[in-house]
Image (cartoon, rainbow, N blue to C red; front, side, top):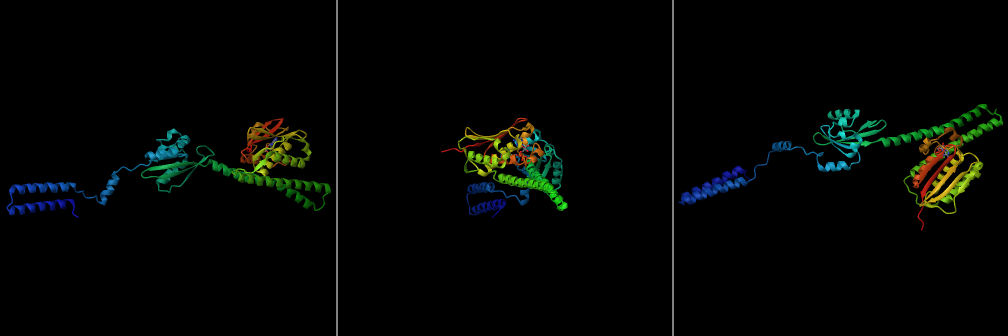
Length: 410
Ligand code: ADP
């Protein structure tokens, strides 16, 4: 109701009035003096106990400015969080790196703490970006092309804190770029593979049309058989392309159907003996009598066996054995196929399961290969928790084998 000073004046006035009234009433001077003294002391005590006036709004702003800004970068919880982040992260104040997590140190080096951010993240985009921010540009994500090494790409994102502090997030995009490149390479390769037989078909059809029925029967038959062969190649390519996309789509779906690998391999061998009659007698099957129970996709495992055995028949020398074996190895079963052919030089081995990779393109085409067989094998094997091994001796032959976990019986 009253401010501190007014309250004191009122209290003293009341004490004085009381003293004058007591004096006029003929009061004892000593009692009046004691009363005055007690009144003054009481007023002074109450005055000192009353709260002082709150600061005006102007004072409040001044108080905030005087209080030092609270730094998020120096907060102990911040350091704790930064260390848990898997991606590189830097804290900067006035563009000087004040904190960096392990991932940032691994990427950029230990020297970055205390360094200017342009020295820490050595890329032309960093300097451009900092000057743009200084001019008030929005905080957009920046691409660091060829960073830290040629062919790699990282992105840099910033969060502005109070004062001159910032947090910089770095993120590796190289794997995403590599996957994108693989996808576009695949489309380009598939188109190229389809275009080659298509061009042959169109060429021979046009020639037949130009000859306008003037061709002799043997020439016409030869052209027609080329057209048929090239159309068959296109058909096989389309079948393999569909297979690979289906197998890839199923990649993360573990198979749950109980199957017998021995029966599947037996069926595949029967089919191949029928379709590749020239080498039917070369297949030697050592499959044993035991079932090989596992969880699997019957059609996919049939395709895996077909691709490996047919490769051995295509690339092994005619008249030499193609040995197909099933053998238990602890809790796994190994399917192996051995041929006697030219073999594969060691530097090709790691790349054989890449799509469209061939050791000898002309040879592959001449035996009707699409370059997708082993890529399909690899995907099917991975989906079944298989382990694919390819061993080869140049001039002697090749062994391709896959082991799969057996299903626990009982
Ligand atoms: P393709 O359809 O060309 O046979 P694959 O993916 O099945 O494609 O195999 C890739 C390449 O690996 C083949 O082009 C061939 O050069 C080589 N290859 C595969 N299996 C064998 C083998 N048993 N012996 C020799 N080379 C092989």
